Amino acid sequence: MTETIHPSGLTAEKIAELRAIAEKAAEQSYSPYSKFRVGAAVLLDDGQIFAGPNVENASYRLTICAENTAIAKAVSEVGPGIRLRAVAVANLNGANSMPCGACRQILYEFGGVDTWVFGPGEDGPVDIKLGELLPHGFRLERE
Ligand code: THU
Image 1: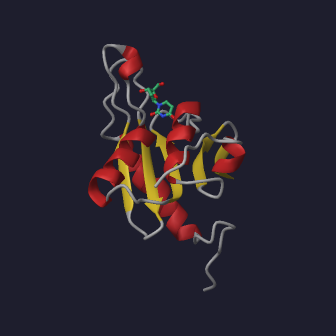
Image 2 (image 1 turned 120 degrees about the horizontal axis):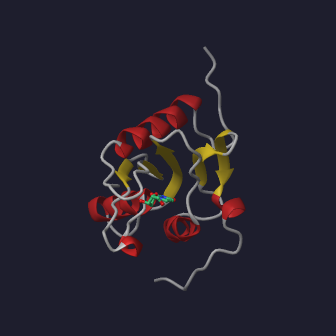
Protein backbone atom coordinates (compact mmCIF):
# COMPACT_ATOMS: atom_id res chain seq x y z
CA MET A 1 0.00 0.00 0.00
CA THR A 2 1.31 3.46 -0.86
CA GLU A 3 1.38 5.84 2.08
CA THR A 4 -0.37 9.14 1.54
CA ILE A 5 2.07 11.98 2.15
CA HIS A 6 0.62 15.27 3.28
CA PRO A 7 2.35 18.56 2.25
CA SER A 8 3.76 18.59 5.80
CA GLY A 9 5.72 15.45 4.94
CA LEU A 10 3.73 13.57 7.56
CA THR A 11 1.81 10.46 6.68
CA ALA A 12 -1.95 10.44 7.00
CA GLU A 13 -1.44 7.84 9.73
CA LYS A 14 0.86 10.12 11.73
CA ILE A 15 -1.59 13.02 11.45
CA ALA A 16 -4.44 10.76 12.55
CA GLU A 17 -2.31 9.58 15.48
CA LEU A 18 -1.56 13.17 16.50
CA ARG A 19 -5.25 14.08 16.33
CA ALA A 20 -6.15 10.99 18.39
CA ILE A 21 -3.57 11.85 21.06
CA ALA A 22 -5.00 15.38 21.26
CA GLU A 23 -8.49 13.96 21.69
CA LYS A 24 -7.28 11.60 24.40
CA ALA A 25 -5.64 14.52 26.22
CA ALA A 26 -8.96 16.37 26.18
CA GLU A 27 -10.34 13.68 28.47
CA GLN A 28 -8.08 15.11 31.20
CA SER A 29 -9.48 18.61 30.73
CA TYR A 30 -10.16 20.60 33.88
CA SER A 31 -12.95 22.81 32.58
CA PRO A 32 -15.70 23.07 35.20
CA TYR A 33 -16.57 26.62 34.10
CA SER A 34 -16.73 26.50 30.32
CA LYS A 35 -17.24 22.72 30.11
CA PHE A 36 -15.26 23.03 26.88
CA ARG A 37 -12.87 20.08 26.92
CA VAL A 38 -9.81 20.73 24.79
CA GLY A 39 -6.67 18.70 24.16
CA ALA A 40 -3.53 19.47 22.20
CA ALA A 41 -0.68 17.28 21.02
CA VAL A 42 2.63 18.69 19.83
CA LEU A 43 4.93 16.78 17.51
CA LEU A 44 8.57 17.76 17.91
CA ASP A 45 11.22 17.69 15.18
CA ASP A 46 12.75 14.60 16.79
CA GLY A 47 9.44 12.75 16.59
CA GLN A 48 8.47 12.97 20.24
CA ILE A 49 4.86 13.83 21.03
CA PHE A 50 3.59 15.63 24.14
CA ALA A 51 -0.02 16.33 24.92
CA GLY A 52 -2.16 18.11 27.47
CA PRO A 53 -5.58 19.59 28.18
CA ASN A 54 -6.92 23.01 29.10
CA VAL A 55 -6.76 23.81 32.82
CA GLU A 56 -9.27 26.41 33.98
CA ASN A 57 -9.29 28.59 37.08
CA ALA A 58 -12.01 30.26 39.14
CA SER A 59 -10.23 33.47 38.27
CA TYR A 60 -11.13 32.90 34.65
CA ARG A 61 -8.33 34.75 32.96
CA LEU A 62 -5.75 32.47 34.61
CA THR A 63 -6.99 29.58 32.50
CA ILE A 64 -4.30 27.66 30.64
CA CYS A 65 -5.15 26.56 27.12
CA ALA A 66 -4.45 22.98 26.03
CA GLU A 67 -1.78 24.12 23.57
CA ASN A 68 0.05 25.89 26.40
CA THR A 69 -0.06 22.78 28.60
CA ALA A 70 1.33 20.60 25.81
CA ILE A 71 4.16 23.04 25.11
CA ALA A 72 5.02 23.31 28.81
CA LYS A 73 5.12 19.54 29.05
CA ALA A 74 7.43 19.27 26.05
CA VAL A 75 9.80 21.93 27.41
CA SER A 76 9.83 20.42 30.87
CA GLU A 77 10.55 16.93 29.57
CA VAL A 78 12.94 17.70 26.70
CA GLY A 79 14.35 21.12 27.49
CA PRO A 80 14.42 24.62 26.05
CA GLY A 81 15.66 23.56 22.62
CA ILE A 82 12.43 21.95 21.41
CA ARG A 83 11.36 22.63 17.85
CA LEU A 84 7.74 22.23 16.91
CA ARG A 85 6.91 20.39 13.71
CA ALA A 86 3.16 20.12 14.10
CA VAL A 87 0.32 20.46 16.58
CA ALA A 88 -3.11 18.89 16.68
CA VAL A 89 -5.99 20.33 18.66
CA ALA A 90 -9.21 18.52 19.51
CA ASN A 91 -12.21 19.01 21.73
CA LEU A 92 -14.85 16.70 23.10
CA ASN A 93 -17.67 19.16 22.47
CA GLY A 94 -18.06 18.54 18.77
CA ALA A 95 -17.17 22.16 18.14
CA ASN A 96 -14.61 23.97 16.07
CA SER A 97 -11.56 25.02 18.06
CA MET A 98 -8.56 26.26 16.19
CA PRO A 99 -5.83 27.63 18.49
CA CYS A 100 -6.75 31.02 19.97
CA GLY A 101 -4.64 34.05 19.12
CA ALA A 102 -2.56 33.76 22.29
CA CYS A 103 -1.86 30.09 21.59
CA ARG A 104 -0.75 30.86 18.07
CA GLN A 105 1.96 33.08 19.54
CA ILE A 106 2.89 30.41 22.12
CA LEU A 107 3.24 27.85 19.32
CA TYR A 108 5.24 30.31 17.24
CA GLU A 109 7.83 30.63 19.99
CA PHE A 110 8.92 27.02 19.44
CA GLY A 111 7.82 26.61 15.85
CA GLY A 112 7.58 28.95 12.92
CA VAL A 113 5.67 29.71 9.77
CA ASP A 114 6.11 26.10 8.59
CA THR A 115 4.74 24.44 11.72
CA TRP A 116 1.58 22.57 10.75
CA VAL A 117 -1.62 22.99 12.71
CA PHE A 118 -4.34 20.34 12.61
CA GLY A 119 -7.61 21.29 14.23
CA PRO A 120 -11.34 21.14 13.97
CA GLY A 121 -12.47 24.15 11.97
CA GLU A 122 -15.90 25.55 11.22
CA ASP A 123 -16.42 23.14 8.35
CA GLY A 124 -14.56 20.08 9.58
CA PRO A 125 -10.90 19.14 9.93
CA VAL A 126 -8.42 21.88 9.08
CA ASP A 127 -4.76 21.54 8.20
CA ILE A 128 -2.92 24.79 7.85
CA LYS A 129 0.52 26.28 8.43
CA LEU A 130 1.07 28.44 11.48
CA GLY A 131 2.34 31.21 9.21
CA GLU A 132 -1.14 31.49 7.75
CA LEU A 133 -2.81 31.54 11.17
CA LEU A 134 -0.32 34.02 12.58
CA PRO A 135 1.32 36.22 9.96
CA HIS A 136 4.23 38.29 11.25
CA GLY A 137 4.44 36.46 14.60
CA PHE A 138 6.45 38.21 17.29
CA ARG A 139 10.04 37.15 17.94
CA LEU A 140 12.93 38.47 19.95
CA GLU A 141 16.56 37.65 19.31
CA ARG A 142 17.49 34.43 21.09
CA GLU A 143 20.82 32.92 22.03
N1 THU B 1 -9.12 26.85 24.97
C1 THU B 1 -8.02 26.10 24.69
O1 THU B 1 -7.67 25.19 25.45
N2 THU B 1 -7.34 26.36 23.55
C2 THU B 1 -7.66 27.34 22.66
O2 THU B 1 -6.92 27.58 21.72
C3 THU B 1 -8.92 28.07 22.83
C4 THU B 1 -9.58 27.93 24.13
C5 THU B 1 -9.86 26.60 26.22
C6 THU B 1 -9.72 27.68 27.25
C7 THU B 1 -10.97 27.50 28.07
O3 THU B 1 -10.71 26.54 29.08
C8 THU B 1 -11.96 26.91 27.09
O4 THU B 1 -11.22 26.49 25.96
C9 THU B 1 -13.03 27.87 26.65
O5 THU B 1 -12.47 29.04 26.19
